[in-house]
Length: 147
Image 1 (cartoon, rainbow, N blue to C red):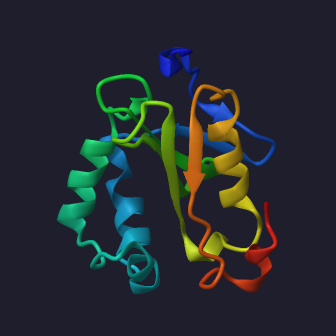
Image 2: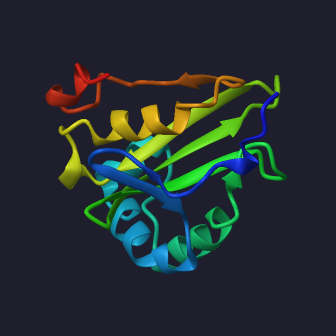
């Protein structure tokens, strides 16, 4: 199985930059995850500032899918401004099967950014089968037809 530890970050697409989390991400994580319309789809309460600070620190080392965390957690940036994050993690059932999830600031919804970020994270991970749960019922209409 190829090793993702050689992953060169940041990943860059035509419109986005995907980079590892840093403790300095707490402010934007709080801004996004504190929104009730975001939290309800995560089956979680909106985050307070303390929770955002803890999550920024715990996400920081998760940039190696085949490393100790078995997770790739990346910040999605548009024009160097964080607009969300994307995670790819191995499931407990098989080391070549992974789940993928993402959170995007609703202010940036409807432009295909989430699909572009997920596609870039999956590119080159041929050793991993990812299972994405697209919940189209709650997505804005313009995102329902996005790849």
